[in-house]
Length: 286
Ligand SMILES: [Zn+2]
Image 1 (tube, rainbow, N blue to C red):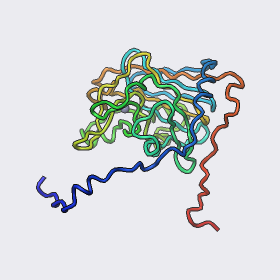
Image 2 (cartoon, helix red, strand yellow):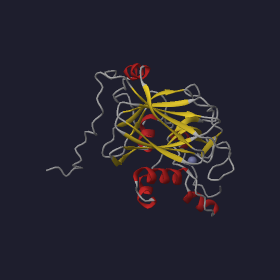
Image 3 (cartoon, rainbow, N blue to C red):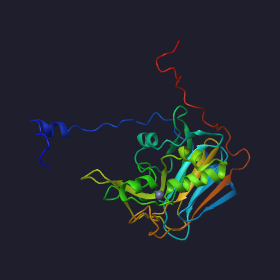
């Protein structure tokens, strides 16, 4: 570009300043993973929901239970929404989860809820793709940087009317589960955890990229419900997201959600996290 401003004399010095982590997370209380994993050993399956390709389904997970999302039949990405089962205003906060843990999350990290509760909704306890790490392109798995594919952006970019984007799939699933109309349900749909999706940002232009997911049938991501959860999972029309989404051209497969209940007494000492401790006076306390 020709209209860039001339760099100052100390431009390189300014660029060379080392970054600092915005939210050092060492003070976050560590999840009791050993307790969770021991409780998972004796847990029994109490429910399962099959999510059809290019569609979404809801599922409920009581606090203290586990849920597992599994790849079936072929590589497939899933878009996950979470709400407090009894108050849909408390929902997964992808942006703050990203700020606290990074662009992608794995076992040992948490899915945090929106303001004003800001507490752990779920703790990831097992991830068979945990070996992937960060590849040479800067790509990694299970991102909290994408939003969810949606028909509005598709319309903006291509002028079309496509009805099976994750946003619409999640809206239909929530409406069907809750008895709300589509119009009532839609505002509760929020930015997702992109389960199994492999994404990053290009270093040269900073653009969001996706690439074929490394997920294979049998791979799974498992989480512990810290509070009572209502979940919705969409099997993205992008399939493994190797080429495109927001259309019916990609090969798509179902995803399986299973819920597991630990044995009585297996979570000795665990308590469901309380809402955030900020007093909400916002400087007007009196
Ligand atoms: Zn999608």
